[in-house]
Image 1 (cartoon, rainbow, N blue to C red):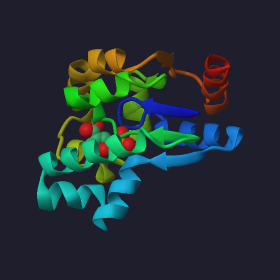
Image 2 (image 1 turned 60 degrees about the vertical axis):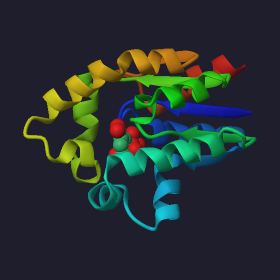
Image 3 (image 1 turned 90 degrees about the vertical axis):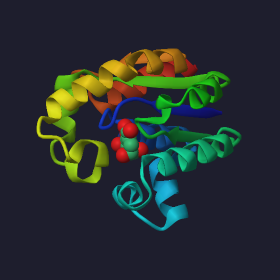
Length: 168
Ligand code: S3P
């Protein structure tokens, strides 16, 4: 069993991922945290010191690696779908689940954590930035996923419940 969560920053991938892993007795892998461990550096510092392209390369390398792991729940970074190569990899997988949150929900969730997110922290208008980024990525999340869950106004248990029904 391998469950892969995709979706925008602050859509709840980590929280939901940990909860499903717990429920099903699977290992939880957060790709951002794995990259931070490998690089011995925070995501924000990787972006600052090496740039986004370097981070995206590390992300693709890790994705190629983790999709062969068994009995895992994998939480991806929100930008994993920005590379077609990554979408192709995700499309080979059965349980790729898109946590679909709207701009309002994302702004609410991200407000306390903007500093950790290099692509948002320079923005004067975070809502506009999220809205633009989400528009350019939305179709990619759809294409990469097998199941779409509208997470707006749902708590973690409700989202987890929907995932459990899907995987049967
Ligand atoms: C990114 C999302 C982040 C992290 C990096 C880039 C993005 O992951 O990978 O800051 O491009 O949307 P989360 O979705 O876990 O915040």
